[in-house]
Image (cartoon, rainbow, N blue to C red; front, side):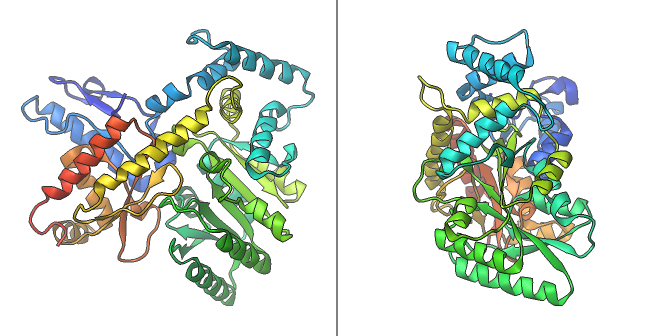
Length: 465
């Protein structure tokens, strides 16, 4: 199904008028962040209001959730992995399973029965993750270094709890733009997250500014404990090896841990990409590295893992104790996803190819007034820059609301396309962005891009000028 909500003509009210195909409110907020959540809520209101007005008044008939992955579309690619998970959970209603899916589920069950001790969950699933990461980084990965999680938000909370503790002076350095999970989690925990600006085109400047920020923090008697990085960045740009080395040297000199949000799917097998843990090993630096991955960006599901390198065993044990662990079904799904089928094209390859194809389609936005769309090198999202002036800026000032949030709200009202405001991820002052997911069926993605083009072409006088 291509849309998030579907309106039924002649009906009104939430439950009668809308058929929802999203996760519950708490999970939706956790997935997209509170700023985007407001846009999603507005989409519901727009569609419901149009439905209540009858077929003559229904301006927006379909909402396209371009802010997140189309879970139903992706599930068609990953169907056999979902079958494995359902079999492990003992679900009676399971779609037709391939012999390999049945065999894999039996293998997991047999391994669990042979296992002694389940303090950190069945080891077979962590073994699958360890094998995947070993292949990704071309370096041995210990089973004991793997922590399974319920996605980026639980990972963020657990890591900040472990690394910052109860200290009122401890801080974490957050990239801007960067993952909303760490920004919002650090705020909700009462901890101070300090932003540093990321310039994808000038990492020397980024590292230099970061060094200055660290110096100023220590002069104010603050204690930086961890540095969060995202590779690829939120705009889909890969961090060059020289910049990774510089960040590791900085972390080593400052006594920082590195929390690396790394895209394990798109970068596997690429010789031009190096992980932070791999780079640290090559440089001989004992920098604590927490390499984090969540499948949400590609699949809409929140399963993930943390790989701990140069991290004390007691800290890993603490992490296991405080992290929100995934269900058995979710662990089986993640393990299966990261384990290639013997006789089929890799489902992971198909998922990554979808993102790459839609990244190329972004060229359709080239030349559109008010949009600057940089090249997406890797990842499941794009972060086009938008020029906002005129009506939108005046409305933002009058409502004391970030201009890109007003832009995204207007986009929903006029086109039905949901995008994520860049202000939810942090951005350079005076710059505005919106983020979109690349994980959609081609026809849906092209239709959404056409809506965005029309939105810019038919804007009121002075919208961007």
